[in-house]
Length: 390
Image (cartoon, rainbow, N blue to C red; front, side, top):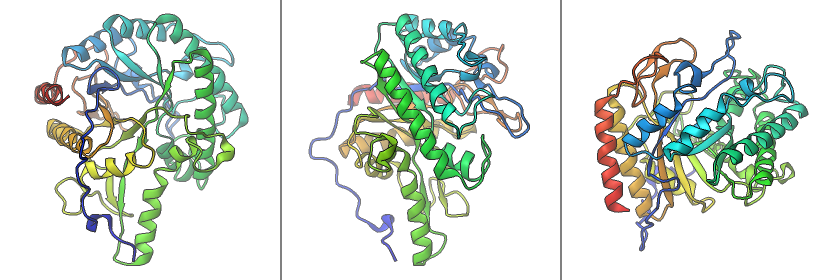
């Protein structure tokens, strides 16, 4: 049976701990949910519109600044911008770009967050070409509105999307048994889009946002251990492809990604085929161990691109993540940010239930941005802690 990582000795702190400067202006940052895919019912999600963020970006960015967060993850809504092939309507994006510029907010822009125009087949060559053109025109518009060097995440969560959309039919395009094919296609799209934005602005930085998970064996035998190990390895395939370490025929290379983003939530560790292993469970692996292992694969600057939970546990989860990030930094990991995602609470994708998962209430797109005070207090405390340790 293969060795269980839990039984391996903990890594020793670096002799010269990394003092990770914020990558984007502040260690804490906010992420705005921008998923825009179609559900099985045919209904199109548009989370930026559902929370009102697309119309209230100036207010939302100011609120972030008020809470010590000078950076954000946000996204472009491709299906709204390219309403017919080759025609782009930037009227919805321009106010967001200007709001970010005027508030001094650094934004990491998702170019594709699950939602594609209705006439595009994700498995087709047309998808690659259309997305490349969209990325090129988007980069040109963004460059015209700000003097700051842009940061892009071309395709959000390639690994998750490939599995949910290509293997288990849980997400668009609702395919079965085509996960590997969809992963390669999304990698091609990300690489092509990255080349396009860099051709427009050579200062552009490319970030990724990939899940950071851990799967435990379902039983104490070699077959179960191998299966769990395979799941744990699969989470790195998309990034390895982007960097040319796997499937080099896709065009990946060492400079394809400048900043690695890891998405990790409270339920991202589980028994293979079974239940979640939450913090507090004896099997749960500390986040700093996962970060040390993941960051050690590539040696690039990284950040927590997405983290959060629902309900009263929100401030405690942030406290845990921030503490684990500092431990990873003490072990030499160049971690430059923690993105609370989402920062505006929203309605559930599939059932429209109120998800209490943000700092601000956004269930009513026209309503007051009510602040969840316990999380706001924890954010203020963590801003101070990181300022003292920086």
